[in-house]
Length: 416
Image (cartoon, rainbow, N blue to C red; front, side, top):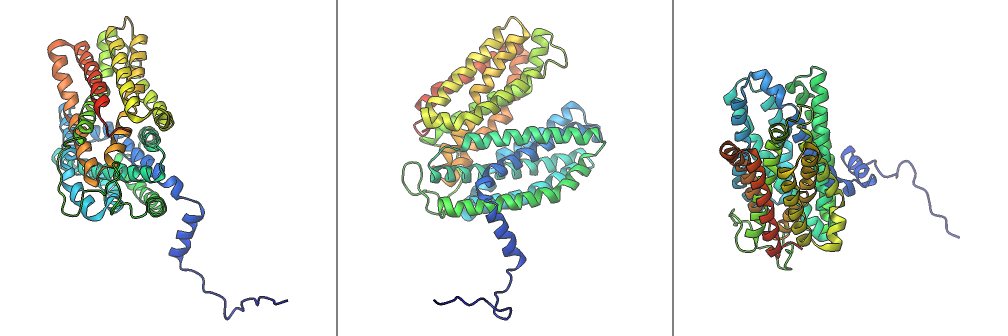
């Protein structure tokens, strides 16, 4: 019987360096299984925190409503311009490295925006924020789409649900900070280091998930059609064409609908039904809540029925809900209509982004650009309609757009 000698203190292996030990800790906690949802929640919380402090920013700089609208317009303009930066980064560095660059910049950009002493500097900071957040959004969704394809099971709807949950948590955090008389600059300065640490953990887990589940996710991965990604280092950004054009149209129409409901539903409740200041915002609350619930179950439904059928049915449901709100005899019926709209529109972006991300690194950037353009143009377009024919006509136009989405989705073969 041979005994295995034990290592003496002189021959015992050296302890691993702290960086290796920390990486082992991340592995031991199986962080890669939670890294992708945590990254979506992180992004939602960050942007929700900023949205929750916009009233404080407005009050601190004594901005009028029109000046605040200009600030928000700068953010939307940055989002539309962002693909000119994200496309070359995605083509040359890949999704994960692009995500890392944008993620490290985001907390600092929020601090700079909160510290802006004047309207012009705030507008410049919001332009940068729109670019940076959109680059992060495109890279995050693209990487999640590739991992979804590698794991061969739907996950995008749940991930967007995590972003919704993070956004609600961020808004709540911003409200709590405001009630404690914490300024926006103090809040983002205090949170920047913890947010960066949390992001480091998320990105470490995402790198592990990419290596184990998708191999070299950003190089030579097969698209949804089984072919190698056509996007290489020399590829340039273009708006969606061919089969991708239908996904771009869905992104555009969906963003117009969501952005317009977010901007005008409360005012519609107030003008159409005389809702109180406490009741009018419930239209957006029920819309957001049913959207979150729908995304929690969207992946399971996609496995059973397919993305195209769900987007078609969801768009038709949204059209019926908005039609109900337009023709409602009372406020409660209108609230039910907006709840139906949230239920139906919830799965559009997760499934459209999932389909685009499987095609090419730059395909999602093009499709997302259409969505950013819709978010930018939708609210003022519906505002112009409301100015001429009233808010009831504006909500009816949104209902027609969602009905058109159902027709477009029925022809979008990339939705699978």
